[in-house]
Length: 204
Picture 1 (tube, rainbow, N blue to C red):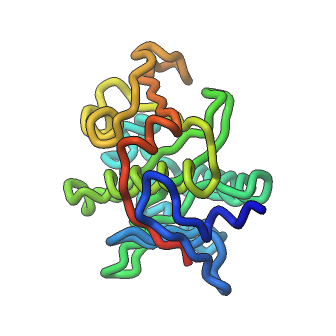
Picture 2: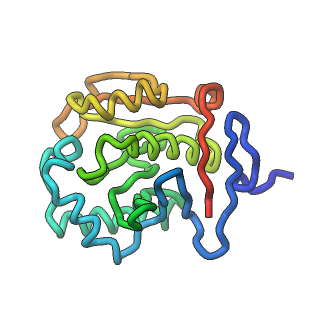
């Protein structure tokens, strides 16, 4: 009989994920804790989303407090509806919320998608790659998705390098239309992922 996938030793992975009895859906990488958002995260998330430099490759401009609250509520509701979704990225060293990452569903793709937004002081440290790899680990090994997609603005070369070179995702098109923009659309199959990745996360 199939066991809980979070308790299995996964093919293509050296991670054994063990759920925490008090903090479900909370997990960690080497430098990050990732947990579902709650309403108390609003001001910390606004600190990130209110920075125009952080948001220029996401929505072209910073978000207002009201817009951030709408986003936060959508993250919470996604978890309630689907049982997975966006995580608050918590820096282990400071215990500070430094961004968001996670898997989600919307009309852009038939596959679950992942993304990340990282506060500016934490750029260039490899944290985006760390979070991105963890999303694939979680999506393929915990959720057992057959494929995962990601989108990037064409000019966001740093993120595109992570998707193609660090994660081995396939570029499907550079002209995907979305909200008046042309986006780069990437995807990776679970079978492809299992042949190339070894990454450790611990689910608490």
